[in-house]
Length: 329
Ligand SMILES: [Mn+2]
Image (cartoon, rainbow, N blue to C red; front, side):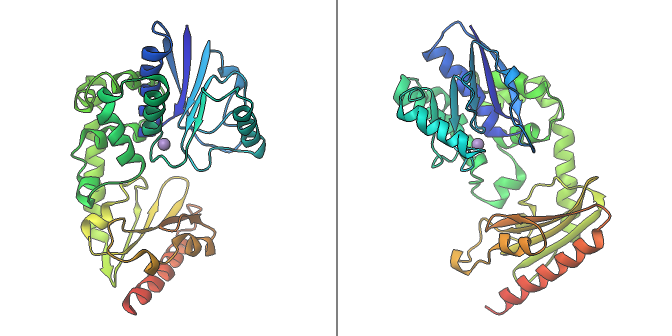
């Protein structure tokens, strides 16, 4: 039996979910099955290609719902799991009439899809999740950004964090399918020691150190708010916890950065701040004023690459507003 596993690519939780699904399926459903892994990414338009659903069984994990009858298994935990009302209705209908009851699973209360899948496999199918406890724990920490301190988020000492860096940075479509089987076969430290994984890490850590140094040189901290402008470097994908590692006392951080396709104003807040939630300003609302968006605690605004001046002006206004607010407390 051939099983095709579709998973959220460039995502630690997606990769862990794919690996855990295959282990669970092999141990509890079909012992001699073989598995093929296909990464999926969010994009405008159709997310799936029906023609890809050609396994004897097809599974989607940590990714949006598909109403295709060719989908055998589905596990997800995203709030926005259903792209359309029709998809949501198909799921509810299939659950109500019993077609999907023991094959399609959804619970947005879970921090990671990996921990949700482990729970279902254990409670519904008798799967032994003890050997994958490390994987489940780290999928929750990484997907929920539940790092205990800016130090652990930025120094990335843990194998799971280094694997996350590699998974999120890779441009090689063959890499994650190759990595996935290892994730549930050995401790994460050993996965990281596999030569095809280990060789990718040094240049990424080097780039991370450069970002840390550059932001450290540029960042200005005043009245609870960090500001930095690194648009003279092509460096958009920096670790977003760096500002709070440098200034743990900060509440907010505004960073101006540039890539080939945009100038970005990143507007964030310190996940470890002592400021009470009711005293925090909604950053999505601020970003929306400039055509951006996001969540209450973190948002962003994108400008065309040639509109750096407009981006810089927006950033300066937001910095003034947040500093005035913090100073007035
Ligand atoms: Mn996830």
